[in-house]
Image 1: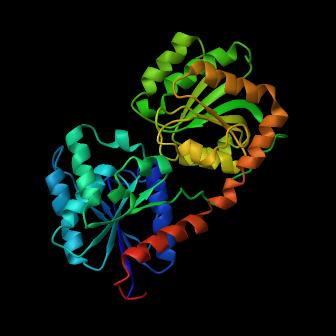
Image 2: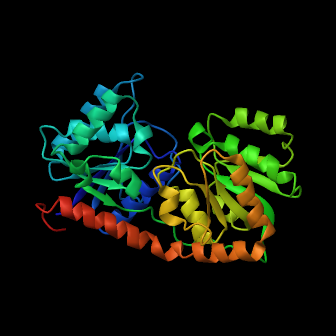
Length: 362
């Protein structure tokens, strides 16, 4: 009998966590698992799933209908007592655990961001800790030691760290082809702090006036950020590219990649930029995702959160020392093997097996 796995999510609209879900799901499908997605929203999908993967959509009736979502998940958990249910998003994880009460379904959740920020208020954090610590939650996947250590010892005992898989066939950076462009990839929201990047870039342009900044992603702050480029006098040097499926082919020949987040789990965009061999700069943001992969001044540069002067200095260092920057990029490219899809997905498969030992073998 095939081992059943359900992924619970709002959808697959283009985020980093959704990409990891799709990669792991396709890997499991290739390994002959019975894989399904429970979609709590019906949104445009940015990632392809294998033909054998089933999708179940819930049309949301009204805003804040969390009880309806719990009931919807519960139906699948009740009908599939031999299945493992996996959620990557905190609120959906809590719904999935609650929905499993009274069923034999087994739940794996994953904290993909700074746990201090994923829920707000003492009451919600208490509820999260109680549910993560309860018997229905079998395992918790963290991306960083910092995120894991945030929780109490009971939750930590269920925890395992699995980094993100890097997609296969990424283009390779070459200093012979690089152009004077700084690139950044991510949602245009407050977490990513593109305001910091734009302010640092404005300072950078005072010394390096021949550079362009390209920002890839969509989000609610786009208009605000465009207006900021005008206020800073750099509107002719900044291009907002939107979400693009060919982003890697567009950025591999840039001078550097920059991530300016206030907090970040483990950025797929950063990992992929490193794997391509791009010289990379990141804020040293909680809960330590960048610090997990960047060894400062060896395979990239870390700068303090919110410090535009230090960010500008790091950008200047890469632009002014091409050979040193390229050596950092060559060392960063080692991520390509360390975080291959096969290696990371096999860790997920081993975890699924470990929490479903009572199931029949495939």
